[in-house]
Length: 193
Image (cartoon, rainbow, N blue to C red; front, top):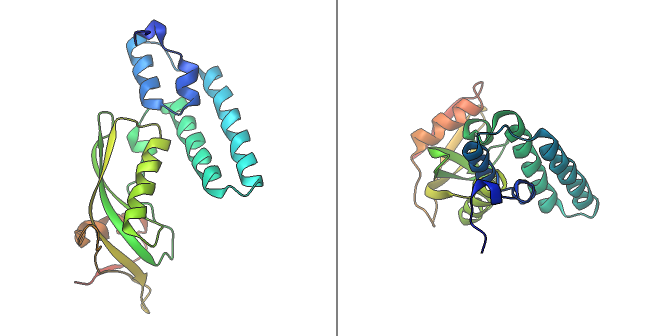
């Protein structure tokens, strides 16, 4: 079995697999600059694969490949920077449905609270968030749910946070409101009990 010393690491394989945390470890240990040529090669391959998946109707696969491409593009310029890679709030304008507060933690991430959405079930939002963090290149990470709710817009064009999650309990609606307000500064956010 080969040892994991910097000289024995196949950086191309790490980049191809989206293992940016391990790639960053390699660059840190060897004190070398990120190899833009190798990264550009993998970016081209990801772009091609994403287009092929989109063309065959594999939308979820295409979205994941595009997310990996975006992460690698950021990695090329900034290294494995969680502040540039992990958005505090993942919520589309006009969204009506479930939200989940999660704590994302890891060796290179630290610990951050984020709001995620985009599914009819809180457990699916959690699963997709775990997938998102892996796609961004963080292998040594943990996504922990800390409560859910739902949101809607009311007749006064406010974003209203209400309810809870059967799976994970009620989120701290003040934290959720702060995250939503930061993402949509022109909107008013209201919390219901």
